[in-house]
Image (cartoon, rainbow, N blue to C red; front, side, top):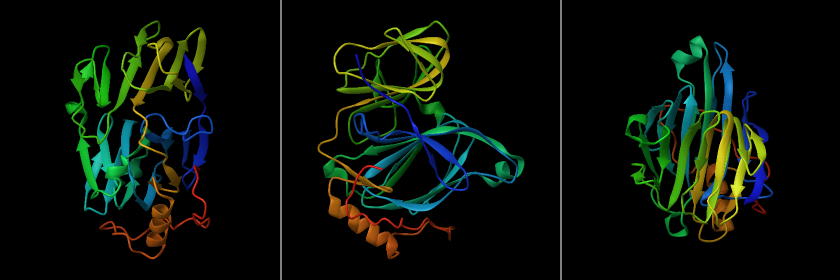
Length: 293
């Protein structure tokens, strides 16, 4: 029933802040429409320190940010200024192009804080890759909570529906599991995965630790059990409508579109984030041959 086991790679976002990247992977580039999966933390940020992801561009995707601990201030070129806190959802549609930054708020930077959360990238349908950029924030209180305290972040499951507006069918849920409990992943999508955010789970007689992503083969309903208290993120959806190319922060069904976005960023043609003067420069390896990082 298990198609692949993905073990995240460590990536440095700068200033020593590291993430664990499960997607894309050599064994499995995407799960449904999800083309990118980063875990931030858990990490303690000392007083005077904080997360500082300077303004950078995106095209052709939607970012989904969800926190377990901490707080991040989101700013973007639409003029959005929004704090995201545990249990909230930020869904940012890049479409034809958007620029944003993500930083620890000043009050937490002064005292020190913790950060623990997940950022996903969702590939947009080919017909929506050039839509106008948009941003939506849904507070934790508006997300449905299913039996077992499962929080439905995106999509529909067991008669509930998330208020987050998506552009293709998908599911994303935050499922706590007490030691000894079990969960059937009875959602009907072609592609399904479970990511162990914390704790240890069992599936078909094998145990899996925090950081493991289990990608299930199509067919029967998977069943996972908690060997000890665990927190699982569930991902599912239909495959994207064709191949997607990824280079740096850009996703597109067309290589030439990514090359154009790179040229636009280098030339300063993207809109700016109000109140921000810094930016992340284009990497030196220009996208002559677009590939998965």
